[in-house]
View 1 (cartoon, helix red, strand yellow):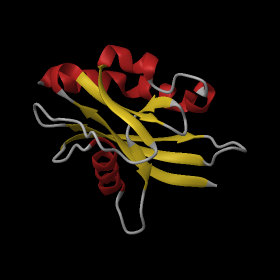
View 2: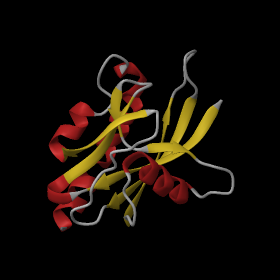
View 3: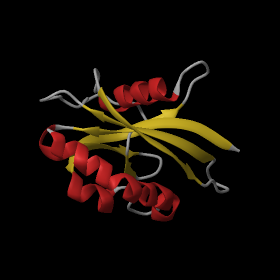
View 4: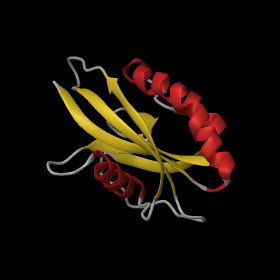
Length: 146
């Protein structure tokens, strides 16, 4: 069974992107989560970004499409619809985050590809990294527009 999820790549000041440290997965990921009943994917993405990072009033930039993270015996598969947003200038990250998130930080774009999904369970996040390479240029161009 595959869970419907949505999330976002959020641009910050000076070409940074927010990542969250997942306690369960022990890795850095883009903020995302389950789509609730009656909620659009974009609404879910905005809600999850706010819950996990504290960022609100996000500027919509682009729909980055969907990728699938395969499941295993330990975890369910996920169909993840991602959006590209920009946070307001000088936006601060939350210090109080949901229990499944340990920390939230801004990373330079150049560090995101090697940081995303790395660590002990790296194989679980191969789809995340592969998908990110397909949208990297769109993200880079969005950063340069500012």
